Structure formats: C-alpha cells, structure tokens
Length: 167
Ligand SMILES: [Zn+2]
Image (spheres, helix red, strand yellow):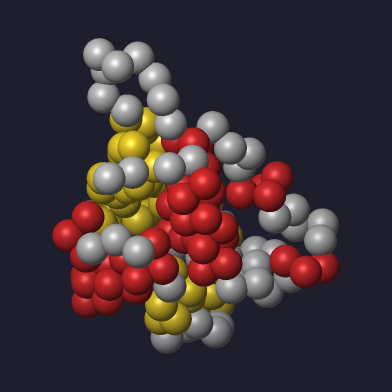
C-alpha cells in the first residue's frame, strides 16, 4: 500500500458483534468450544470474537464486512467454522500488503468466566492469523447485571486492530 511518504502506513479497524445465548450445548468463542451449558445462536458457529476480529481487519482494509462476504442467506455458511472468516481476512491482508501490529479485544459476557480460557484463545487466534501471542490482547467483562449481556441473554465482543504496511 502506498500513501503520503511523510505519514506511516498505518490503518486502524473496529469490530463489533453480538450473539444471542441459549441454554444447552457448548459456547464457541475465540476458536474454543467451552462446555458451559450455553451456546450462542447464529447461522455459522456463532463465534462472536472471531466475527468481531474479522470485521476489524476488513474495516481497516476498507473491504466489505463479514455479513457481505459471507451472507447468512447462503447454505454454504450454515454452521460454518468461523476460522474460515479469519483465514479470508488474513488472505486479504496479504493481498493488500498489510500486516497486523496488534489486536485488542473485549469479550462481554455474564457467563461463563473467561479468564481460564484467555491464553488459549490468544494462542488459537494467533495461529489462524499468523501472528504472535503477544500481539493479541483479550479482556473479559461482565454486563454488571444490566442490558442483554448482563441478563445473560447475549454475548458480545469489541475489537480494535492496528495494521501496518507489510514488513
Ligand atoms: Zn457474529
């Protein structure tokens, strides 16, 4: 990517996603399946963190968002592994000759407690994105018993990503 040579070739992206939670099953989040008696509802495997990361990267690149690239009206996307979306975002990074400086993520969920799973999520996501563990930050917050997250009805994620010209 070329630009004004006086400015660093940096791009910032923001991703946001929410899925409804329902009883039973396992929760897919950050590439892990957590056995917590809840599952998130969606057309794909409903991995809220992978979706927010994908949208942050696509947004930074000025590409169409995840819903336009992988419409929920397409049978092929039903129960699809959300890792496919990250792999597509990684391909688009390569095409744009950009790479990830870092990602910072916030998971919002009343249950389950995410702390025991955070480092494994960082390892898993780093592997799919071809970056290092330390380039991914993940925090988990509850909804303080208010709004849909706080009532345990939804799981949500926010992600910012910083990209630089590939080095
Ligand atoms: Zn989603």
